[in-house]
Length: 282
Image 1 (cartoon, helix red, strand yellow):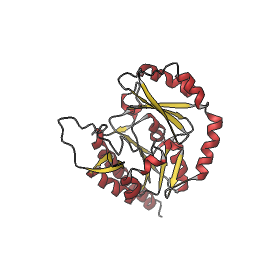
Image 2: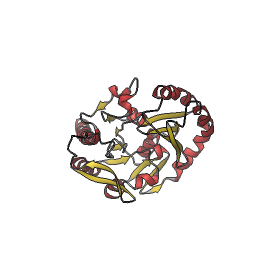
Image 3: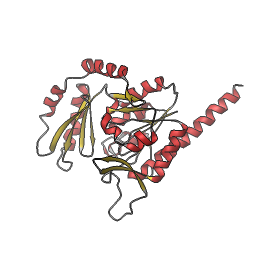
Image 4: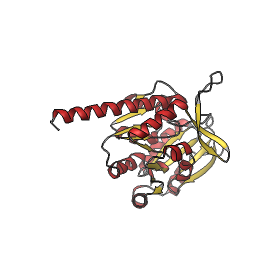
């Protein structure tokens, strides 16, 4: 079994995204990421222990919108857990034993040319909506997609939601995650990268977790799926989260529910396979 999981606001959390209220006690945590001597993200100690257990029992596959460089600085995962493979750049890059899969990179490069409008075209369309009073800056990630840092309280959310249809017609997906508004070509997606690794690693079952629209394709295609009870999937109009299993705990504690669920379905799957083997006389 593969456990394919988003990282930010699914397994790891900054203090800003932890959803620990001002009067609440900060849970017992471990540091997961550091940047230039600054502590960036955390996991609860229980979640960290559960992730180690998951990693020892099945194939743990980090699946993140982060670039390769940004993923590698999450030292608890990249250096302590050391998964065999990882999906970065929202599916645009795959790492196997820490090295980029060149075959996958070639596939994505070819599809970008034929399946999505050029970045400049969608930027021009978005220019009718964007304004300097709510957009702080724009960044490009691994030459695959781009995102805007925004002022959340000033962003025209209804108009952004409507623009998703325009973007989809041009072969792009939009996802608003906190202070970041992502523009991602449709061929750069998490599920297709996971499906590719499913074949490479010769696995047959996928459990998945994620909190945003960029995770939805992976959650819908997985054999088992769970979403935190917070995040984009739960606050957007016509949220699809109602069809997904959701955690009881929110914020940084949600990772504990996710990992306990994955361990549970792993045991159930193992029992089902074992039972089927016995009944068939194998």
